[in-house]
Length: 466
Image (cartoon, rainbow, N blue to C red):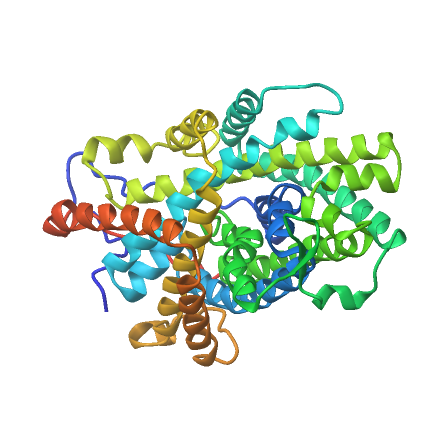
């Protein structure tokens, strides 16, 4: 057992402490799935992240994403069991702290915060490219505007945001479906090309994509469908979390994998040649397959998808920061500010704290941060798998929760595979992530650990079977 704390009765006092503030349970599986799918943001992932994979992996891109999606099934099993066992807005860090110890939970928190703070501005800066058919804008200024808009939306009631993001999500799916239809109807190669493992070299001739390159690309492939973890961050606001979390996680992974993978296959088959595929300019391909009007429509849908992703990511990030303050991760004045809830029940200070810096990050060179994010996601999944391996010991064995099939084989296999994927990442990305983790460990050793009775007390919400 660890020293993770559950809420206890407050001693009688003239002015009793109301205890940790709680988020309002206001959404069901449908609303949670819409929000979570929006965080996966299939269309913006397809148009912003996938082109980089085409440039590296060529025809092996679809295969790499398919393998990553299969690995994510095992990850989703871990999240589903742990998210129903420990339904907390702290997400990964609450789960890992409870089951694998406070230091492991702190490191997961740092990795998750690294991911969720960097990704929104990186994606937001892509908005300008997809508004180009209508108006030419500066990418940094546009990205900053998207982040500020997402921050304002994040201050609203979560139920309202579920409807906003749901509408945008419909447009995302339409855009992805249109790309898939056009790609399949203009096929220039057979299905066997999906395993041909070729990419256009600098001289325009085909180069072979090695198995090691595919393994290296799995870190980004895992990131592509990573957003299903949002269901765990929202677990304190989901009705009947013991049932809703697992359903939301698994439904989101299944839907997002189809929305992303099917168009990737269609693009691979529909590209006129290997150089066009490796170039990854999906917008130009869509225009070539149809006309300028269709290309403009798809681009606008993608721009809305990016705004949609920004809204949901700000919501998710603010919940993580709110939970960390509630769990005493920072000096007391900081904890008091970040744990404040606004009139709509949202953590408004935490929302501003993640949204405004995100707008500023749009003016920073973030070229290497996709690689750092891939390493961080892989490391975070690795620690979650370790926690899942420990989820059925002691009192946790008898706690009501969704239980994954094939335990403990699933988490053991996941640990081995993820550790191997990490060994295949570029040294620079590993050093950046390792350096940040080392600084976080020093903060733990010098500030949190000496104050273990008053700091990093990971509280869990009252148990609700629902």
